[in-house]
Length: 105
Image (cartoon, rainbow, N blue to C red; front, top):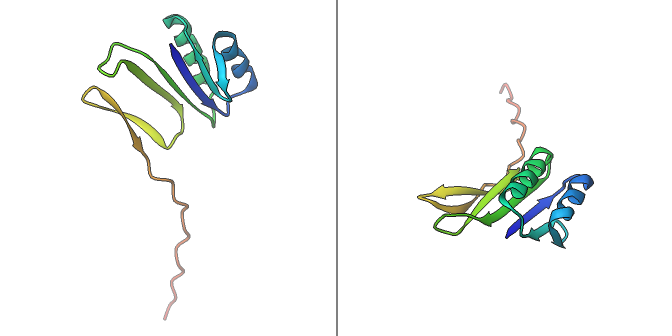
């Protein structure tokens, strides 16, 4: 079983994903594929992600029973904590403010 969620990917990538996986909701693909097909799909998606983002979850021989991969810029960032994958939220980027002018008096 493989679950792949993508945002802002080119249409040709969505077409390639729909050949192997079912698009259960916009940008959410689910299916049972071999490890080799999964790796090829992930390589394709992560290579063309650009400004978009992707998350892939698939079974793995871990304590949690799955592996989580991400590509692109997201606020949620997976981290490994003693073999467990947890999600850390990054602080939103603050716009840089211009410095106040210094007056000579």
